[in-house]
Image (cartoon, rainbow, N blue to C red; front, side, top):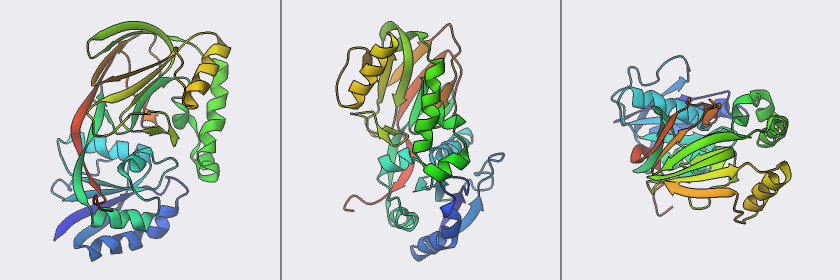
Length: 289
């Protein structure tokens, strides 16, 4: 019988996953899994004692998935991960095509097949969806869980608006797959996935192409920079929003700007960012679905 652990975070999203724990386990047992439910402990490695399991099922948001992937990589393991979306935005689960309904997502995983997707790594810290810094990019870290539970993605917007007061440029030296350039940037987004906070920003990104989709907002005056970002969000291509696709990116700066990985505290400068093609095993719905 296949062995699985069901790791769940009751603080993610609106906490509704707590009401579905036994029902989700029942789904997996119906598909031949011996599954053990386990409340996540962010002070422990969930793979300790679980090094030989066939599947790690994670119910939580992108931050929870990030924690689990880093814990697995630290132990040198390569175990398939199944994601039951239970957070606020669930960007990575969306890129995998997972249902927003917990029981349906459980069925997709239990009856699905193993696939390989890309994973990012910055200074030894792994990420599944996005690495970022600059304006709006550390919003998720500062948004209170209680507010996320009450109003969902709107909580990110409210917190992000506050950042206008501290808008500043970060001087950067960038090398992307051998191409070098300097930039004074308000924001840098390095996408492995397709969305950030539920907003579709990476137009050509795929978790299977071995490349990052990168967006860099150049600092001009307040009005011009804001207008350019609005035009980009509306589908335009303003010159001061630089877009590139790359597998390896090195970034240096005279400022040690705070960074973010999947909504969690990120790495410090200088930054070496690399896309590992097929670096993560995931359990997804079968293609015919």
